Length: 174
Image (cartoon, rainbow, N blue to C red; front, side, top):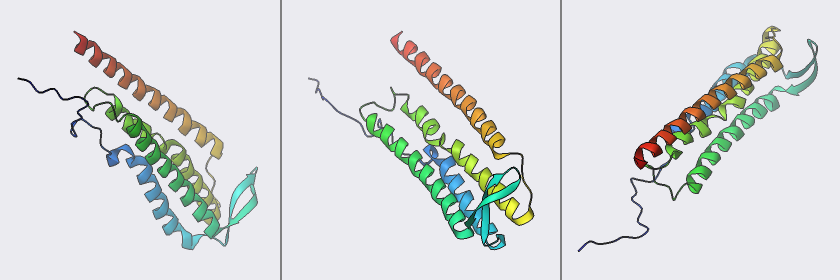
């Protein structure tokens, strides 16, 4: 006599949170804190954050500048964590074996690093201008390059994941 179990979920089939799902956002917030701590003593009392041509026209106190950058990075990291948790919540009825969720979670959680990377470059640009009066190329060009490359990489990763999942479904049906 066989025992039938309805709505049974094995704990090993469920997708569990892994830090690899948000490793890049966490790393970038840590890098921002380290860079802010290293450069803070060298900054002047007011840091330029807006430029008209190559001349600064808006300033912030250095403490406010550093807190704003770190808070922004923290927001993006919490956003990544929240996205991963939300996806895990919505996918709780899918098993880890039959779901593309374990493959998609690292992509979705770590894609927040794209705007975070723009913030790191902006912070370095403002800090280098304040300390050494050196400016990179215009920040909008750097941001555009980062965003376009990030979008291309995300499209490639999502396409590979969808193809892999479709191939797996096709093989399971045969």
